[in-house]
Image 1: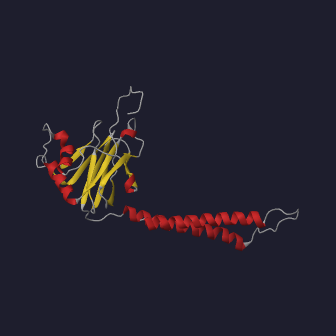
Image 2 (image 1 turned 180 degrees about the vertical axis):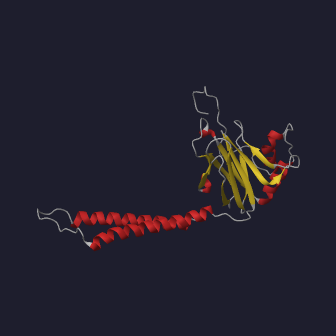
Length: 248
């Protein structure tokens, strides 16, 4: 995708160079020297045609590279390797792993954040991952800066995108759409792991029964099972106490 953006930048720089070049040409060669009336070019077909055709070509080039870049970014495969559903709500996240169901209720396993715990989205490396988005209340936006991509999460609208992560690591995520009082505290973490660890993580989540005493601790226990830190390392929970007079 980078070479597509580079081409767009080259086209934009070329257009800028043309504009500045014409500006300096006018300043240098057509500045006022005496009281003689400058040469008039009104109704000059060549000049008027040039002023129309050159900007049109520049716009067409920019539009072309924009269109092919958007098509590349929005392209989705028929059969992704991994599918997850991100559910945004005021003011946290639920991550649902669609391809693995709980043996108890036959629903996809999931983890969900709270005011005291940052939700962690665990994904495998070197796999085609489709992220489906849902919102339960207002418009949110799923944004992981390290992925160089974000997409709004809109109630009643099915948004999705695909990504392939090539490096293991922990990456901070945010809601990038002003969604209310605690918008700035709506953080999460993306944890990319090996494919083997990803499968082990999901298998561990399957062992927790909804309603059991340890069910709310399932995220930490599943992370510990693959040797990962059980808490987010790129961000931390923020206090929701409205009476605080200092940052948390």
